[in-house]
Length: 223
Image 1 (cartoon, rainbow, N blue to C red):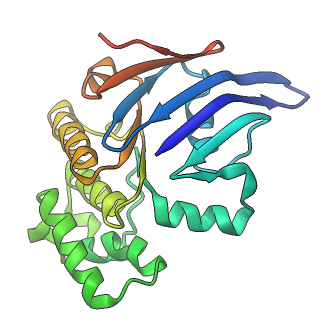
Image 2: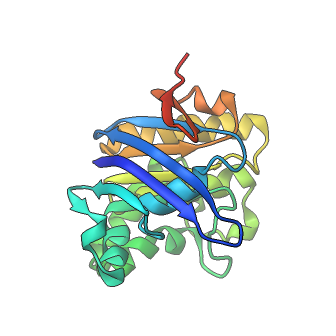
């Protein structure tokens, strides 16, 4: 699902520095890994490169068989819509849309027929325990409920790769534990590859593997 080889990224002057170097990563379907590292280690930069939101200075990235370097901006946008799902710390649900319509957004962008989309939205919300809140507005939900909705939205179009950037940073410990267990279970059940970026060792332990990002690349840091 994901292959990263010899990845490097540098920032130019006036604050020239190497952010990433010698990064290698392979993920298969159903595999869920956590990436940790100190602030400034390049975790968010790595996610941006994998998502095709930025270009590396060296190395290759392949997502679901697609070489990102060979794609223009329009093709990268299509790749994100079709093959990637995103879960963010700040949820990024649209406040003026119902829960159901928020989850339906990826399907709308892909042109999925309304009847089929409605069924997939119901299934996705049922999987995260939020079907009874389909008509609710985001303002009526707790933080943990909002993150459940975000997970449903990230997975409703059956992506090959799920990228989660500090998804429990705004949650209390109990809600965070529930969301982390749910995220892993959903990635496994849907046969996606998943990356969890986190500062929390507790959160990282919910993944199959824990990787530490440093200037030397990614190193296995599993317990």
